[in-house]
Length: 352
Image (cartoon, rainbow, N blue to C red; front, side, top):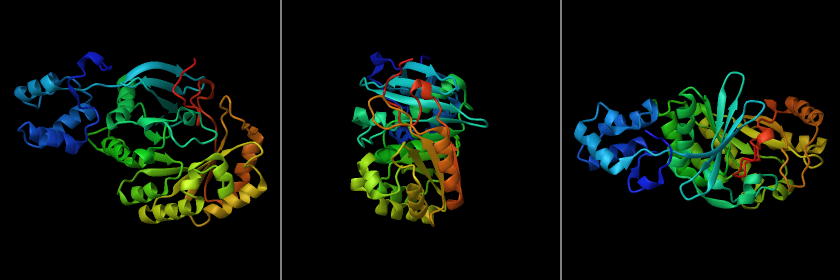
């Protein structure tokens, strides 16, 4: 079966993106027992069987009815690129014509996949290429999980061990769909990836951080911080006007207290902006008392943006200065820089 998008078959309902409860409800609507939904769910996400006729624990009559009215339709790949460091970027074209990107990042002992939750982004951070697109729309559950299913079809079930919502868009502004995706990812008969290996990265949507804390999910949380004072953060991240730094830190204290999980702070260094001793002091004070890890990253250049990338020596120095003041500090090296796949560079195009 061709797993690519076929625009001629749009009359059928696409089951990709259905959660287990939705599958159960579908089966009840067809006059079947709810447990049949679990079987169909397992065929789709765990077994990766997309031909109803081969789902052998379903009756032939049920398989025929499913084939008449439903299909399992995946993502349409437009282009892909591979970096010299092994990182791969995939450009998908959605059914309404809009682009979305996914990045597969090999590490020493694991592979992480960076998925998108929105087409474009409304937050307009002054260093991020995705923000130049504006927000097109939220991705559906099927379009988000479809990125992962596509990679498994391409490389097999063990092609990634970690999932990070760090692609296009702000995942907490597509909260319900992202949560449904995580439930599919972490289900033992879904993708079977532990929720502890799933990370949501946010620019700091305080109410949704509290909502995530109350959700019961064991997903990890990362915050794109990038400045340790309200004045500086507003200059680079307009969302800080709506959700100020004080309220953000209160939400993170609630999150760590409610879940028992530490939070990861992503801190991008911009030459001459947030890389001084004063910034180190402010960052140290800001995170004091919060169970956390700090990832230090150099700014990845985006054409047309005025910020400059600091030297590697400067980034290493900043990390060394922070480590005694924070419980865990990591200096992260860019991945996929030569194909525009590094942090902040996704803009719905592949040039190589």
